[in-house]
Image (cartoon, rainbow, N blue to C red; front, top):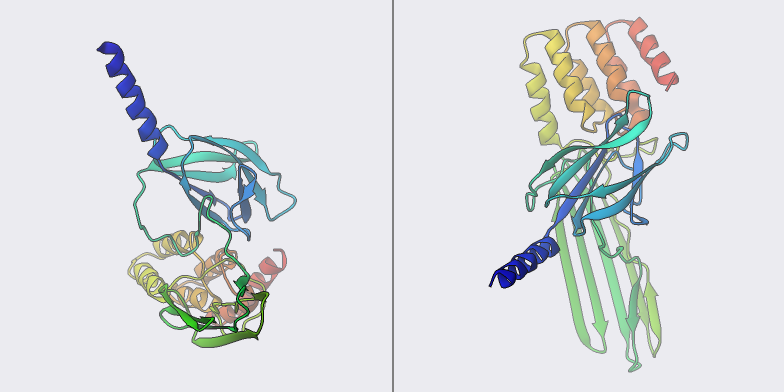
Length: 321
């Protein structure tokens, strides 16, 4: 009986471990952009400052952090999980000035939790999104496929609508997708359409229409961070700063908020206008530059200064970066 009980306990433990799920969040304390590689597979196609990998089910993986800045050395580290949960890894410099990756927190996984606006989320092992639609017509019938993608980015939310219609040998197939992500700071709409028609047998390759979210209409300059704060979140943050009585507290809270978010130049200007002292405005403008989406528009913040010397000081600072 004792042997059977031990066997049952071991079997239950194995089942529990097999069903265990782990999430990993990797973020750069100083804002360096990077790629996450797990077991030799790159997780984010573009460099990010905050990456969440969900759906991990093994207790040990080999990870690598590759920085966008080629001058920064890669970080190779095995990551292991003692218990199910969400593990947060902080990428920072140690006392020797070397870049290291350390576990900062372990918390239970919250299902369907909304990620921060500047976080890139990927499901480990999920297939790469297809960029080609393949339609086979072995019966020699007529194939017609039409793809229309409309992207609207407005204030305060973005809407993405996609309609796909297909006719295979007289059988119609339609797909309609509507996404509202609550993020945006512009009001531009762009529509792309692709139609392919063929007769006879063979295979048709159709490149789907591209979808682009535009945060600053007409802007084509350098991008400083992935995704600006939603209008509602920014207004809440600005109100929190404005409600503080002391200038030093306002500056501290403003840096704390912007340090973990992405903003546009107009939003930086609005926050600067909450300060009473020129020194606070200049200090914040220098800090916020590294967290600004449309860096090419940063000249707009100059309107918040009272003295030309501050404009010159900020220009020199930006020139050095």
